[in-house]
Length: 127
Image 1: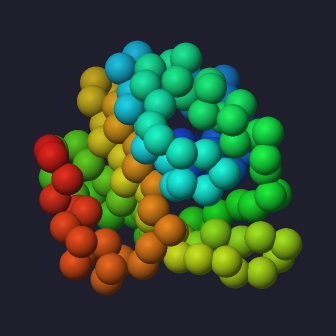
Image 2 (image 1 turned 90 degrees about the horizontal axis):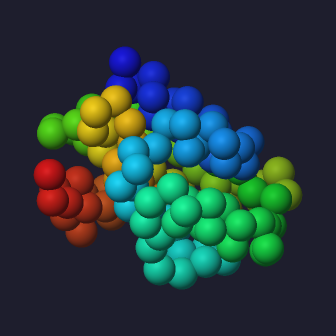
């Protein structure tokens, strides 16, 4: 179920479908997007809307190719992929999500590969 939620969340991100994201987001969601055209973090449903609006103001037309989804612990999941801009690979990508009460409560995005994130301790972010 939660792996399916991660994939649906990912699809809504690529589709830039704010309403679908809000429907899947916990009211207390914390969004830590890749620092790519935006900076900082966003909180709650209004924060999620603001992030998508901020990103839409400067959207390079990128999308992310999905890869493996892996369950971590305490309702946390990671999906690996790569960012594509103008049809060309731009960067490795990782989406970390924490699920609470069937909704996404934390989202973190990284322009890094799995090995780098492992060395940085990202996968042990507070449970």
